[in-house]
Length: 80
Image (cartoon, rainbow, N blue to C red; front, side, top):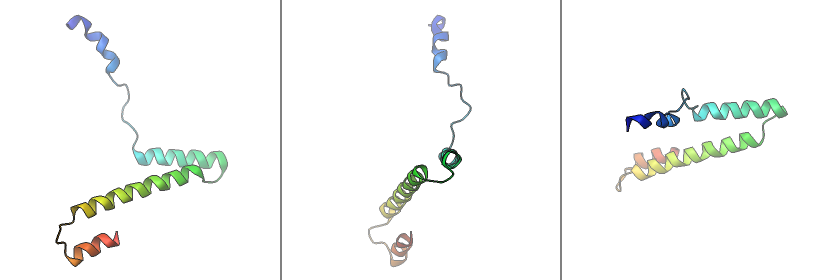
């Protein structure tokens, strides 16, 4: 079994760290602006991704409300 250990080296990743979502978004936006001089499709897509994130967060907040939530708790979720 130890003889074949070197064949498993192909599974060792050679990257330092994956970029964050914010880094990817910034790179795409800069590239688009540099190419066209204006924002367009990439900005539209990034807004959609950010909107989905906000919707997911709101969905979690609503899901975490107790059945007998107070008016203050409901208003806090309404503000979001």
